[in-house]
Length: 107
Ligand code: H2B
Image 1 (cartoon, protein in one colour):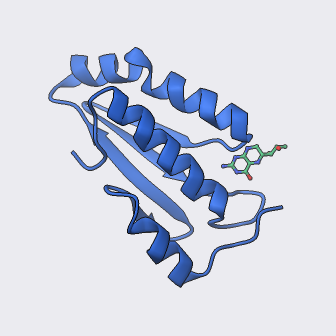
Image 2 (image 1 turned 180 degrees about the vertical axis):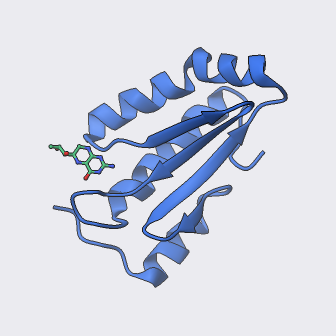
């Protein structure tokens, strides 16, 4: 079981994750596309697929919510009841996957 990160550790790690922020015991990010078709293409083009591959490799899975032209991502370690290094690692992998698709967290 991964250990819970301290508040300071979470803040320090988030400094290296542009577009990600803390929301309670989770970290969240939004990837926005210019319009709905583009959002679905972004998702369809593989952001979700790429993230799913990373999640399976890590056995650590994101919560994903698609609303009109935004995809909302929420990470937390359910087994630990909060944020662990697994969430930080998965966030980096999702942002890297998004970058290859020309998307950046936060807009
Ligand atoms: N994903 C996330 N985000 N948190 C977990 O605690 C978690 C997971 N646990 N994926 C894994 C699967 C666990 O349920 C399985 C049994 O290993």
